[in-house]
Image (cartoon, helix red, strand yellow):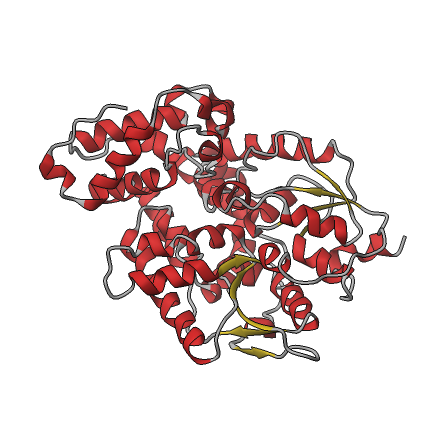
Length: 437
């Protein structure tokens, strides 16, 4: 793609990077076939190629974002299916990130939209606040129907629909400390406690820690860890995201320099994608660039890390698992085979739903801020999953688990919960009935 940025504009390293990304696009349109919003809406401006044109025009002319640009950029899920498809290697992730920062800095959103986004940024990254908000959701449920009728208030109706009826008790596995390896020690890792996941489903990290301990891996939960920054990062709140990244880099590098770390294990693939990008996010910070790069190199999805360990093959379980590959796993981190191979080796029959490249519609806060498009994607995803006739659904991201669970009665678990059970752990609570058959 030809660009016409001035030399003065290119002195901004962020603009210079976006210009390099734009030049790689050859207008081929391959991305449109795998873009969930284009497939759903059929609007060229809701495809990666269409958004690239909008971003180019906005940045090249050095103008503030307008309502049209914001509408179509906001509809992007950041699923990154387009980057998997693109034959030219267009780095769409970092281009859309820059566009969102530009929007945040130059566009004043309508009041209720600002209120919603401010609320999400002030609550979701903080477990105590998030837990309190989920308790308050009980009071709001009777008003969900009224909220749904007002377009500006739809996000609040979506929040109520996603809020679980019951909230697990806080887990001791989320408290800073060290979980010792069982028997001979073979390694030492840190684990991301997480924010929303630690409230919605603490059993995921509990299963992870138990399994790793039995495999001889010491697991540390460092003191001072905060949200990975993913949520605010995708809202264009660059400074807030970078502050979170710096805080976590300091925490994990302290562990590297004291006890050493073989990996920073992440059990939410959305968080993993962001942490693996810390090196890029902080590349212009002389005090953090090198450290952030080391942290990104250490970050491993739990299945990525388990694939490096010696896990015994197990006898068949007689259970069929539909594996849903989260977008942040397959497109963001390029992890496609490890989860399925681990499940097969653990004795499960694994089936892959049709259209596995398409997003389920969760995408961080997307199912709140773009609930109509999200609902269409969810229905399509669940239909494809149920067509495989599974006993269980497995995935590697809490957002996908929460989203899909609202539309099917099939139990959905994190992949590591099944692996923990197969390799000597207790039966997951969600599978007690199935296991007793």
